[in-house]
Amino acid sequence: LDSNLKLSCSIDLSTLSKSPYTQIPLYTIDTMGISTEVPQTVEWAGKRVPIYPMETVDFGRVLSQEPAELEILLRCCQEQGFFYLDLNGLDGSRFLDDQQKTLDLMHRYFESPIEAKNELGLITAHLGYEPVGSRTGGLPNTRDGYEMFKVSRDEIQRKDPKFPKILQNDTDKAILKNAISGSNIVTKAVLSGLSSAMGLVGAARYENAHRNDRPSTSTLAMMHYVPADPVKDKEIGHQKHTDISSLTLLFAEEWGLQIRPPGSKEFGFVAPKKGCAIINVGDSLRFASGHTMMSCIHRVVPFNPEEHRYSIAYFLRAENETMFTDSEGRYVTAGQWHDEKFFLFKATPDIQALAPPSMLYGGMTADEEWTPYAQPVAKAHASEVPVEGPKQAPVVKEALVKAH
Image: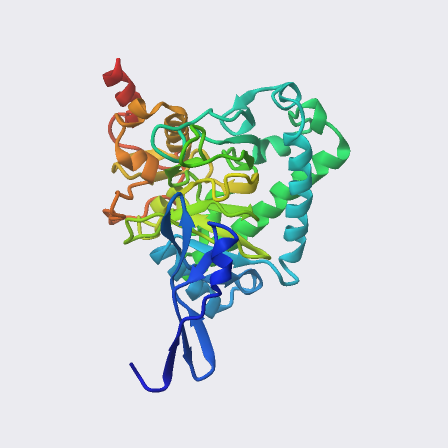
């Protein structure tokens, strides 16, 4: 070890008696007055698990298309698939305000009687209410531990969007519209930055497959995770998966998100960071980039068994008719990929087991290995590109046929 480096470990042991969820830095290297904390662990479900670090990208600099920041942005998407997006500056502060107003709305909505919340049920895959236990859970042999209300970008643009009566007032409608439009602006600014960093021009730029006036499944999802004990309860968190979306914008003030970064076999927590959202690369952008960008397998688990957890996720998804080569090597539309994967999310574990793992994990294997395809093909639309041969059969439907 260089004599100029000081290795130190300073832990207040009194903190250990306060909570089993105490975060403990393993060690700190102090070099010439600059301290850098390196891998931390946290006690969870009777064992110590990692707290994974993530890079932070400045939204204002991305919006200005500063070359150095775009280089960081691209590296995050190609190497990890996750990063913090700092919204504390002038350009991002209004989106933080939108988040807080949406969070207040969520508390009022989820505290309402089930009859009021579920008045319209789940209208489509991207619009309506899902009760706790609707999907496979975050740990083996469990169902999910959250209830969810979703509003699609297409729906919010209608003259009379479908909402339950408890949200049919001008104030709540404005909150939801601002949350969706703001999230749409943020994610498309990031997408534009990635296009520039990749040297894409004209129709080849990613944002041209995400136009507001073309049908898509882009959705705002508001989730309430109920208190649960990961050791004994049977409704736990959110199953491990990669996202369907091109980009996911996530706000969550409580702990619970776990990721398994590329090259790692162990799930670890991501710490919430004040004033920051978390951006996640989804399947569609990974496919659009010719499989050069990374999706990261993630899940949600109860961190503190007594805590309610609230998260706001905006899924920016490609237009339904956008074509790309998926993780099975099929040339399919974004709409078909969404429908197949959403069905799999709702399926029982035995049905999920019949589908290729690439469906839930976007081509990322258990060891986070992936097979890149040579040609990035996601810039064109189905109406513009001839598709040779018969229509590709949906993988999930094939699994269902085998199941019966």
